[in-house]
Structures are given as C-alpha cells and as structure tokens.
View 1 (cartoon, rainbow, N blue to C red):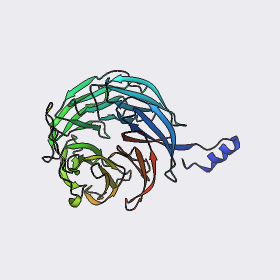
View 2 (cartoon, rainbow, N blue to C red; view 1 turned 30 degrees about the vertical axis):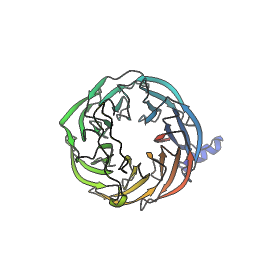
View 3 (tube, rainbow, N blue to C red; view 1 turned 135 degrees about the vertical axis):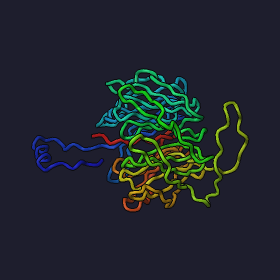
View 4 (cartoon, helix red, strand yellow; view 1 turned 135 degrees about the horizontal axis):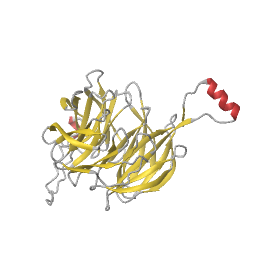
Length: 379
C-alpha cells in the first residue's frame, strides 16, 4: 500500500484524534473469459506484491474493462449472448466490486472506453464491424442500450477519445484503417471527421491505440506485424498524420506477418507458419517508454520514446506469460503487470525509471483465459 504525503499538521491532528492518516490504495482487476469472472488484487506500491481480493461473478467471455473518470465504477463487457456491459461500484477502501447495473450492447465487443466526462461509453465490435455509444447516467451507471451504432470497416477492434474529448478514433483490423470522428459530449454523437479515415500500411492490421502524455501523438500497434505507427495529432481539427513506423518484433524472431481475417462465412486455410500476433500496447505515465505484447512467442517489447519528436526506438524484448493478452501499468509507472491467456497467471515486473528495463518480481494465479488488466488508484 502506498501512503500519500501529508502535511505535518494533518498528521498531528490525525494522531490527536486517534485516526490513521488516509492512504491511497491501488487495485488490480483481471477479467477471466473462460471462467466468467473478475479477479481482484490489492497492489503494494512498495514491493509490487499482490494480495487477492477474491473473485467477482461477471459472465462467460467477460473481457474488456474500463474505469469511470471519477474512479467510482468499473465497466466490464460480456461477449457471450446476451451481449452486455456490467457496471460495478468500486469500494475505495476494500476494492470490492458490487454489481449495480447491466445494459445491452450493440454486439460482441473486444474494447470499451468512456469519454472524459464519464457520461458516454464507447464500444467496438470486431465480429459486428461497428462502433457504438451507450449513455451513462448521472449516477455513473450504464442502464440503457446504445444511443448510436455506426457501421465500420471489417473487424473494428478499438475505440478511444483523446484528452480534449473532441475527437474519437477507432481501428479496423480487417479493413486496415483508422477511423476519425468528431465527438459532441453534450449529445454523445459521433460524426465522421474530414477525412473520415486513414489507411494503414498494407497487411498490418491496426489493433490498439494509445496517446502520448502531451497528447501530441497517437500510437497504433498492428496485430499482424507488431509494427507501431506514430501519428501526429493536428491540434486544430484532430486529424492524424503518420510520422514514423517502428517494429516491436525483432527481424530475427522467425515470425512471418499474420493473415488478414477471411470474409464472413469463409473458413481460413490450415496454417502452421509461426506468425506475428501482437496484442496490447501501453505507455508509461512519464511518457518515456512504451511496452507491447506479442502472443505467438509470448514476449513483451520495450521501446523508448524520444523527447520532443515522440519517435520510437526498439530496445529489447522479454519472455513472459504464455500468450500475453493484456498489459497494465500502475499510475506511478513503477510496475507492469501482464496476463497470460494460456498460463492463467499474472506476471508482475518492476520498471527501471531511467531505462525502462523490467525485472520480474513474482507470478500469481488467476482464472482461465485471463486477458484484460485494469489498474486503478483509489483515494
């Protein structure tokens, strides 16, 4: 548990009243798709040790999760029918999850996020080729179905707003493109930006998107190659322009590029070739380092972010849990946590603040098909 720094007068007053100083608590939540539940842990911010909080029932194929901007609620998406988003209240003391609401989604969704006001929920549907918006009530609960559903290209994989809340971006793996939207936070409506999309390099398959801490750049990891595209964000209109393209998988890995998803109804041919299969991407709070996971060889890549330009340089990669689906960084940037879909474990690493090098601290058992890692600091 990491204690906050409090003024001496506050500490003396607390002691006089017989009360312990208030401490910030950090909790880790991991969705277990096959078990249909969520593992909870308390993270010790000094040692990196995890203490189990137990399991919370969700639903078969529970996967992506998001935390409300005020950190009072956790939203978890169930990808089995009926497609649902569950709202859990976060207990700030114990970290316990209590279900408060459930609402229908437009389809099976591998990604969920909220706008910065906490009034709108965004989802992307890979199989349904669409993105959608659900309203979030003033209470913080998602109780109503989608207010807007937008058809996209093939295999919508991720949807996220920028920090200004004026622009939203969505990746289409199968159509090899990134969609650009304008967003009205008053109405919750998405409208195409101009241009409405940008194409990725052929055969790459955009998957997840993150933003630099100064919001000048967006980084997109491509599932089929592990390449990371850096885009400059036009501050006037929110449009993206590619400025660099960096491999997160070394050339001598022996992995071939992945294959684009076949059209609906078409069975893909049997393929035993080792192929790139990138998954998650995260940036440290100080903006100095990026980590990316690759599932075929089960490794985590480290890349440095150049000051000013935001350009990336590949440094090295590390073996990790089998088929690492999710990566999480604690709010201080001290620890990285990786989930293994096929190992049913978490690996906790300490991050060297100067070099970005990660050192394994411990491993912890979780449920079957562990995928999404959500870390939250609660006061």
